[in-house]
Length: 190
Image 1: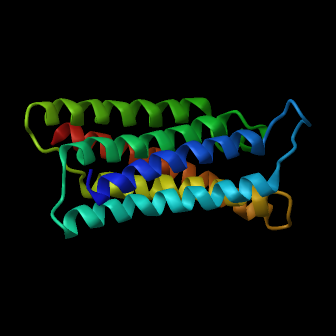
Image 2: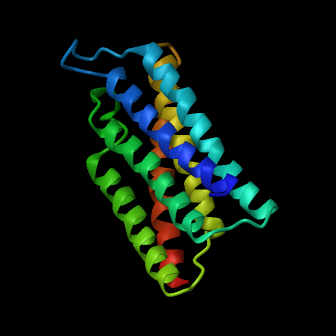
């Protein structure tokens, strides 16, 4: 297993750690509307590191010409786990119901797995199915939305700045939805 693939596996492990932290960050069974800010803060840091490793493994694979079939399939699959899992957690939190609806998350999840299925089918037939510019933009915006959502919960929700932070969050969620749909259309057209 080459270094870029090891970085992808590391991102998968970071995703598991991140989801455990999210689970313990907001647990309404303990205290309703309670946010365990230290856990959420660490989760934000783990997510940022995981998102950065996505850039790192792609850079290393291209730089050292070590692009593998495993990497072309596993890298976007781990991205989908990280992003879809984040949004699935978010719809369960009362603090985010004004911003993120279940139908929005359903569109994101369905798109991610339809495109991944298309990629897997193409790769199984020997067709290289590389990411497009729109797919990379979509991933960037999704990561930015997740980071802002966590930042909002940790730092801004209960402050005087909460109203404008909520406006930004709402805008990012809609931008995420738009880029998710648009990038899917470009992949199916391609």
